[in-house]
Amino acid sequence: MTGSPTVKENVKRVFYVKFLNHPCYLEILGRRPEIRIDKLENDTADAVASPIIAAAHAYQVTSARDELLPKYHVHKELLARAPKLLIVSTGGAGYDTVNVKDCTDAGVLVVNQTGGNADAVAAHVLAMMLTLSKQIIQTNHVLRKGTMHDRNAYMGADINHRTVGIVGLGNVGRRVAKLCRTLFEMNVIAYDPYLDEATMAERGATKVELDELMRRADFVSINCPLDDKSRGMIGERQYALMQPHAFFITTARGHIHDEKALEKALREKRIAGAGLDVWAKEPPPSDHPLLQFDNVIASPHTAGVTREARANMGKFAAEQLIEALDGKRPPRMVNPEVWPAYARRFESIMGFRPGD
Image (tube, rainbow, N blue to C red; front, side):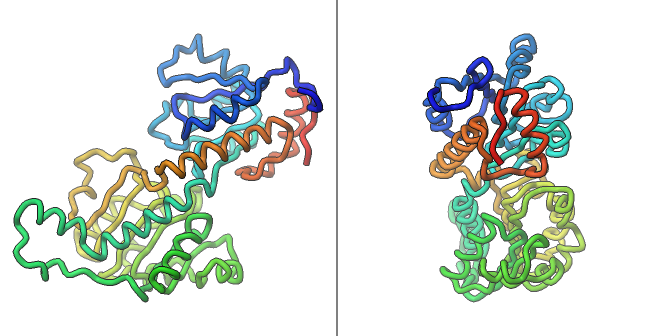
């Protein structure tokens, strides 16, 4: 292309396995004739998949670990099959299917689409808060069964002026904070070890430690990413700190909270209920113990699944991948520390050095 650096063989190769967030991803990349896109399936024969992986410069990978066979998760084994791979781009804010350390060790840049579905996820949190506090699921159930005799038995509660505790005040968390403050004049407290008090105040929350948040909050909302520090962060001790009228809500990742400990807290009526969009195994089996409680709202990791959010993430992913393949520094890097090693590999493979 006139005015662009020369790319070896004039082809930039991208592959994905089965899933894309939105058709606009292919439309945007399709405007660039030098980009070749290959689609694989989970059951694509290795004889077909191996040369595609070996030639790829970029991998657009789904964030949902249970939608993808383990051999297509990004780890040392896959990276060993992809000597030209430069960029791994996830389909959403999460990167459960990517071993970031393995990528960093291999000089591979990881990018995500953080913020693309933040409005949708924040709205889901509010929907769960209202549905739980108003007992909408319970009343819908008994009304359909014809067993509702006394509406006072399903007395709800207002959420105005209550306290919401947000764990993780990033793209989603700050939107939850804004909705709670502006719509319901709620008191917002938050735990985020990566943000200082002033930054959290700018985002509309008072900084507290996790134990204090669990003790004070009428609603606990988990909105942090899954990493080594957050894995298993919410367990029996944390549930025991919660007030008996409080609700636990998570739209983050399943392994952040202990499902067995939550089941115990609900069974012993230590907390009032829960709203769960994420699970250790997705989707959870229909006989999952947590699905047997009337005061648990369940959804199959669909908080961020709206037409608008999917279009946003498809657009984010395509535009960011084009920037990276053009040698620019992409805006949503998960492992920015890899840049020097990545830049050396990029120059060797693509024939020109990316800008800093």
